[in-house]
Image: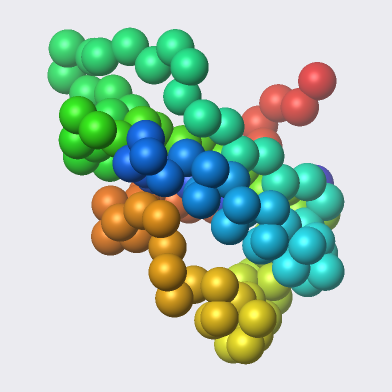
Length: 117
């Protein structure tokens, strides 16, 4: 069964295009290492919650917007191998030097699908 790695991050609104450009450069690396699909989504209708919400989860500031993204892999084994390759690949290290967001506030994790229709 396929495996999903999900991410939520706050990106300054002024860095939207820089984020999109960085994502476009990184996608080929993910695919080279086994990703089947990469989706990046800029918040469009993200309500404030009473107890928690996407903005609170990443401590988004007033001048930031939430990005929700996921990478689809054929399996967890492929995802794990891809992540290790990404950590040591000099191309990724070169791209990672000037992130258009605060990576310390990114949340992420791996998920095994329960339903895929």
